[in-house]
Image 1 (cartoon, rainbow, N blue to C red):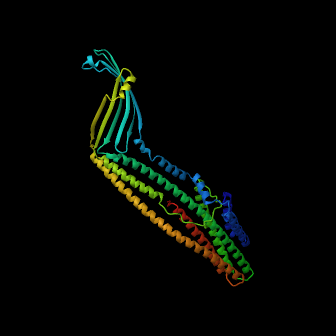
Image 2 (cartoon, one colour):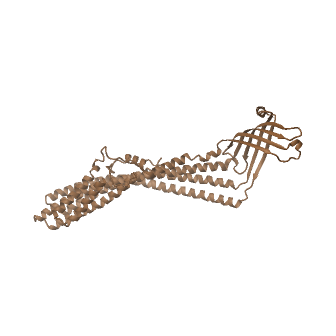
Image 3 (cartoon, rainbow, N blue to C red):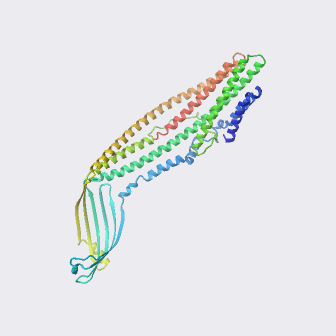
Length: 492
């Protein structure tokens, strides 16, 4: 329904209401006929919902996927979290390093005859370092430099020195076997995975709400057609009753009763039109538009299959956060321990008058130097570290409780939806049968009225029974569609 159609609809409706008491009864009846016919014409695209030009649910969701900003943001957030899940892995990847330095030392020496009075040193170091997740770190590097000493009793000295070096350190107490490092890395990765699942649940929820908006608008449009047809029947009956009353063939009360019923149905149509505008705006809001236009849609009362049951993304996110909190607690417990590391260094050096000869000598094993030792560090903020440990432990327990409750609620909701799905399928079948029976009952009563064997009251009652049966079928089909959309949150 375009803006022009919507405006025309309301204008005609308002004009009819205002003219009922001002114009002649015949003019008022004609205005009501125009209203009912206009409503049907405005909503006639619904009759072609099974045609090729109706906007399908898949087509609508594809448009939502490309135009709904919140949905796009949620998907980008999930993608970003997946790309960043190994961000902390950079801490345990090899690093190339280099260092260049130049030193001038004119410090007075105890024995300048042998130590000289000035020392110059220029050096270049190139190597790689690596920290593993198992509590072991190391460096392998190569160095070359030129050292000049002047002012000795033997004259100036100028030599090149080169060396290859290996350093290894292993944790023996805190972070033994990489317990702290590995826990931190895994906790970070799981946290990013949880962020991705949370964003995925947000995007799934937006798609579910969009699907609900689609079927809600479809149902409201179909209901409007039902109410418009019911108004047409009521107005036809009121005209018939008036003609009989004017001819003296029936009591005036029958006409007044039929006219009152027609007015009530006009009010129902107006109320439903307000629902249509609200449903249309919600429908278009998922397309990023502030509009009340209503394209032709699929009927809600169509074939429906139960989605396969799985686990909701928010449950997976809660499980990942619980695991991450447990690892964070384990890492915090490690931080309360003293640091004890075993370290070793091994180097081979070479001297030469030139850089080439020094480098060549450095690759021989004739001049090794080795170091083996222990490093000990004891944290003094023991109370603070203990509070941290207890805090992380409580946080892990809380996250685990949240996960268990989320899982319980999710499973209960899933089972309830699955059970209601089966019941709604049976109710929808029954609603179709009731609608058919009400239509046949109404038609039979119309035939009896035409033969003068029934009253206007029963005809009005049977008209309303048939309309209520149609609305009940539409509402049941809508509930089934909404329930199906919500079951899609439980993906395998």
